[in-house]
Image (cartoon, rainbow, N blue to C red; front, side, top):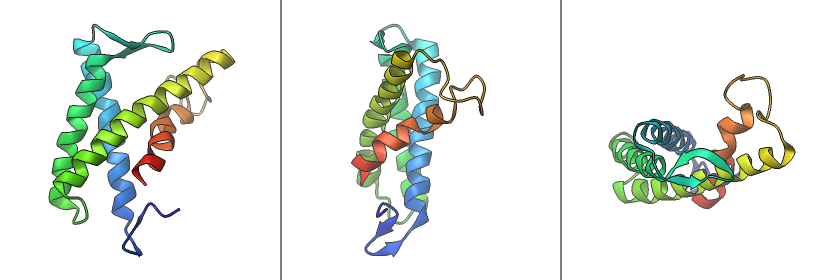
Length: 135
């Protein structure tokens, strides 16, 4: 995997930055969706996801990227905003794809290690789908 390499030098902060942006996006999408959500994003696949949640997650991940650019040398503000855009968009698509798979399989959780959280796959679906696009 070449993702944590920048100019042929290993940099673990690239992976940490990706996880931080995904987690911020997911967390604030949930918070904003619960607080302000009125318009469904794709109700057939994921009835609780809203457009307002998506926008809130995106804005929060852009803010997080700006903060990361202060602490991570490789992460300029421009790189951060572009990364936040890619991770928010493709992370949400990854979440919807995983939800579609679960609906087709007629299962609520992808595992029982984390009860009530949809399983491990629900925690990683955004990263699994968005990481190749960041690369």
